[in-house]
Image 1 (cartoon, rainbow, N blue to C red):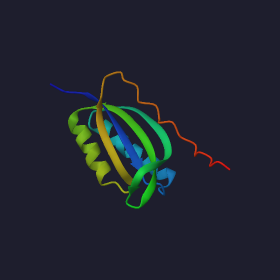
Image 2 (cartoon, one colour):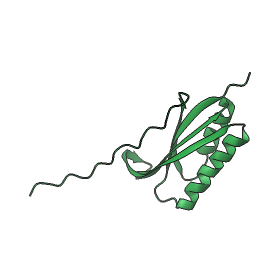
Image 3 (cartoon, rainbow, N blue to C red):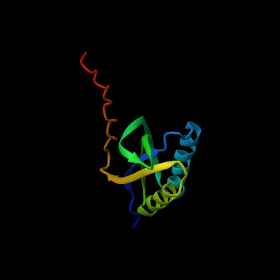
Image 4 (cartoon, helix red, strand yellow):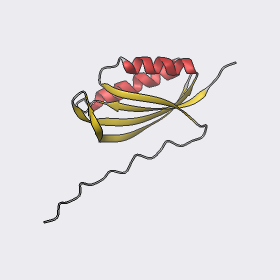
Length: 116
């Protein structure tokens, strides 16, 4: 029996990586998913955001939410490839309930002005 699950990956790309490389990383992920028999969902760019704490001396990252459906084996291959891909800071894959919309990006906060 084939088991198809819905997944979501939060992808963090290093801040100095060129936008063309972002596209390459996402396209490679899409190719890996579809090559493993999965169905590509969507890419939600969240933009460049400040990190809560530094990772490898970086305090910002480009965020993307990737959604797709695949067998667990295809997800394992995607996470393996992302783990060894240059420019990827972190990624986290989670199972999604069927039909669930991706979460909206977190609201950006403007820096508070100091009182004069």
